[in-house]
Each structure stands twice: as structure tokens, then as C-alpha cells.
Length: 339
Image (cartoon, rainbow, N blue to C red):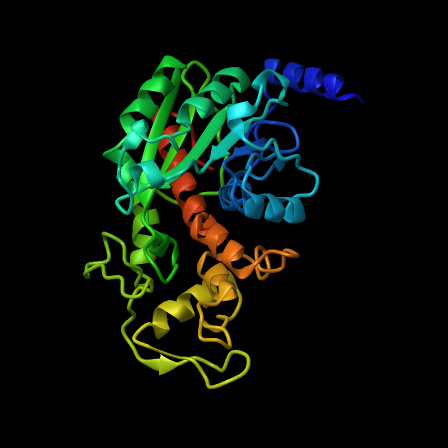
């Protein structure tokens, strides 16, 4: 099948009524097709797949480090590169569009120029939405985006006749040993509310208290939120087992938080520093909730490039928790039963 025939077939598929939904998937055959802009290492897309299933059809990231990671991890998904130069009429339509667009215009660590910042690329994403008409969009940014620029994004979505819901979630809400507070925004065509069927076992309140019960730093946990050295303090002091060569790592008051994330991710904590006492990329990879080697096993990717990609990435478990909560809101707002 030629690319043109594939494109025509995909567009015809979007014009037909969706079949009945399956648990854990949007109402599309074989799960939703996912397109990703500002993809990074693909953490946001992994979250969508955790919740809805589906497959990654294409990605878009022009930076060398992320491009290498994506080519290694998703060899069948073409990289569209710089979205400023993409003609979206030539791009295969998707059911879900994701994007963790640059946070610098809205970060408290930057100049906070908002939409006046030259790195603000939302208008190009809005063009992609207008042309592709995805059934669901999921975007991620820093919490400061609420004060700077979110109003413009919501206005654009309204002009495109898309409804939206948003939420701020910390990585610690999903069990991670650090806070990393982020904004997650879901949007969908107002005239065609999507028929979500996602894995979900309770109400919004149960989602919030689930992690409070496991001593995470949530608003419902009843204890102060504190972040020291990027790791949430825990309540006891004990040493972990030895990791690799050298002396055993003693986490002290952070031990319970480390142990909880080990249990969540299903793998032991790498040593936090390398033989030169520098921050270890495998440790940051673990902190970000990724599988072993997701970034660090990519050939010819320098330590600096690994850390840059990891620092700009999304914790999949955090994004998945946010998406489930947003889908719960959408379903309730449209009178849908929650699976």
C-alpha cells in the first residue's frame, strides 16, 4: 500500500462511526493510533498506552538526543522532526495526539515570558489539531503554565471547538520519590465526546486517597510536603541493599520513599552516583519511572544527552494517573459509565 493509499484509508476510518469500545481502549479497532509532538523519550505516549492501549504511529522531535532515543525505542514510528515545518495535510490522522511542549516559557526557573517567548510553539500544535481532528489530546507542561499561557491555549481550543479538562499532579502522587508537579490537559471535539473505556476502579476521591494511604505527599496525606535534594523524605532510616560495586547506599530518611518506588517500578534502585561521584543517568532513569535502559541503553548517547532527555521527560506513571482522573471527569460530565 502506498503512503497516499494509507493516508486515504486512515481518513476514511476516522469518518466512520466507531465500533463498540473495549476495556482499556478508545472505541477504535486495534486500539487508538497515537501521534506525538515534542515527544522527548516518549513518556507521555507510554502513559496513554498504559491507560488506553493502542500504538504509536508517528513522533515529532527535532533534537538529536530524543531523536536517537525514539529511533531506538520506536523504529517503526517515523519522526516528523520540527513541527514548525510540517504540512499536517500530509500526515496520517491519529485518534490520540500527545505533546509535552516546551516548558521554558512558563517555568518559574525561566524568564516566564509566556506566549511572548520564541520557544512557545503551541500555535503550531493548534494547527495540527485543526487539521488532524484527533478524538483525544493529552498535553503536559509545568504547573506555572496555569498562570502564564494556559488561557491562550484554552482560547485556541475553544476556537477549534474542543472542550478541555486539566489537572495538576505530582510524581509523588503516583508513588515516585520526588514531587515534579506538572499540569496535564485533556481536550476533545466538543461535538463528538469520545467514548472512553479505561481501567478504573473508583471515584476521583479514591484516586487521591489511594496514594495518601501509602505515605505519598498528596494534598490529602495530612502531612507537610517537602522536597530535599529532589527526593521526598520518608519516615524511617535504614540502609538499602548494596547496588553494584562499592559500599551499600544508605538512604536514611528517604529509605521508605525509595522502597515504595522500587515496589511500584518492580526494579531495584541503581546507585545514585557513578565511579566519579557524578549523578548517575541510570538512577535518574529509575526516578523517572522508566524501564531499565529506556534511555541509557541507546547507542552513542552521551551521559549529558541522557540527563538532558531525562530532565525534560515525563514520568509515565504520573501521566497515566492524571489521564485516568481526567477521563473519569469527562465520563461523568457526559453521563458515561466508568469501566
